[in-house]
Image (cartoon, rainbow, N blue to C red; front, top):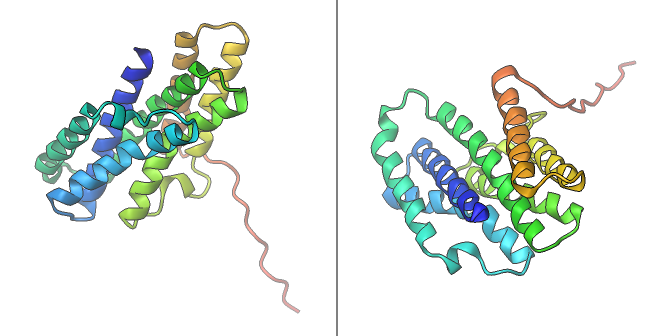
Length: 206
């Protein structure tokens, strides 16, 4: 039940971010629905294919209704928003903090090793947003220099694995995972937390 709720929550919030990206790209209603579904379902679909398990939205098509409802809501309300990009950033941070635990929980339930659990948490959380930004011709959030995005997903998933190995029950480990993921990502948005960025030295002049 916990896994289902996490998947549903991440689908809803990622769908909202997809629809906001569609609004920024000035797409029509069909474009809103497509980008919302792509964003919400992309990471979970890739996760399920890699884990050789039934794809969650094919097994439960009701998930599509969540995506379409989110797209319709944003289609109606986006013009009223003062800063759609700011809304997108913050909603995306919450989606990230829900999707990482969802991926971790599913991989754990299948008794995979720690590295696979971490990778599946990261995949679930990052791939849908990457698809959204590429299709909408935005610089992908996952690739912005120095920003804590993939690193936030990695940190949260790793914290969950460590917590479970120390004997913490799965639900508590998932809370730790989501909290750390969101703290890292929101800190990057609000306070400018960054990773060091490689900068090549300018060529020496004679």
